[in-house]
Every structure is written in structure tokens, then in C-alpha cells.
Amino acid sequence: MKKFVLKKLELQNFKGQNRVFEPFLDSTRVFAKNEGGKTTLYKAFCWLLTSYTDAINVINHELFDRRLELTPETPKACVKATVLVKDVEYTIERRAVAKFTRKRSTNEWVKDTSDTYELYIDDISTSVSDFGSWIERNIGNPDVLMYALMGERFANLIQDDKRKGRAILETISGEVRVDDMHGDYSMIETDLQKFSIE
Image 1 (cartoon, helix red, strand yellow):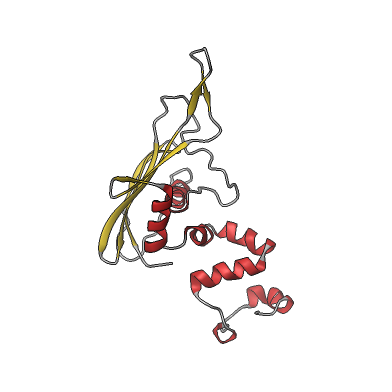
Image 2 (tube, one colour):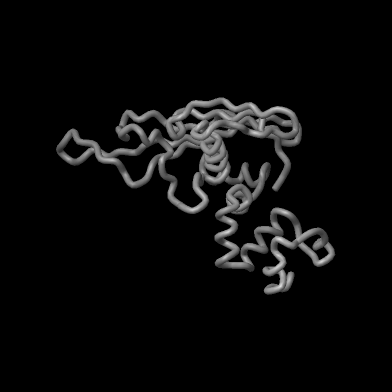
């Protein structure tokens, strides 16, 4: 992953919430009561960078306000970020539009199984591939970002495919060598005894 600074994160109708979050200094901690929106900010950021909101479910669900019935008039769910990359400020945005189809010969609308997505870089509409290329060039590989941002997804992967997990970990942190293994590993001592570092 490359270094970037999140200057602002804006949510509009994302999971029914409208928020503007502006981190400050080099490190920002987010505190709030239960149901205060901490997880929503996190999921919005994950969705913006990776197109996924959930570490377990590969299908994006509940992008819209789950308290309301989805209709063709449901407002777009939008997440927009202002990021600083190598002293250049960019805005990136992802929007979801609830997609409906009208039944033939009726005025009844039926919700499609998927939604329509719109992507923007500096307020200019862009394709999925161009957006992904921008993310990869400026922030990191979107496939790897998914695991870096969603620890539970990485934990599940490492259970199923240790080689792929190691490759992703090396992409994030660089190659891990025996010389790098110093410190207190008592919490994972039993795992270290079961598996060699290779």
C-alpha cells in the first residue's frame, strides 16, 4: 500500500446516514456511543476503495436506509473522499443507485437483483476499470486493500489458503524473513510451533 492522507470523508444517504468526517493531525481516533456511526464510516471507506462493505458477505447489502422500503425514488447512496497523495489533493466518489425494472404492461416496479454504480475522480465520471487503476496507482491494489482493510476477511482467507494469505501479507508489508521475527510472540506460540515460517 502507498501512503496517502484522508482529508475528508462524506456520506450521503449511505446506509441512511449523512455525515462529514474530517480527520486531523497524523492520527485520528474515532469515539462514539453505540449506534453512533463508527462502523458506518468504516464500511463507507471500505466500499469506496474496494467496492465491498462487508468482510464476510461478497454481496453489497444495505447500502441504502434499511428502515425504509426501496423504491425507484430512493436517493443515491454516495461516499466521497478527499485524499492527499504525494502533495496532490484528489476527490474520489462512489455512488449506488437502487435499480428497478418496470413489469411489462403494468406500472409496477420490481427491484433488480443488482444496483447501478457510478464512479468519479475529481468530479469527473469514470469507468470501473479506470477507477480501479487510479486506486491501484495511488493507494494500492484493490484486491489487496480488501484484505488490508478487512481483517476478518484476511483471517478467513488464511484459514483456507495460507499461500495466498502469505502473498497478500507480503504485498502489504514486504517479504517476511526469519530475521524479522523478533519480539514477543507468546500469543501465537502454539501456531508458530505447528508451522514453519516458510
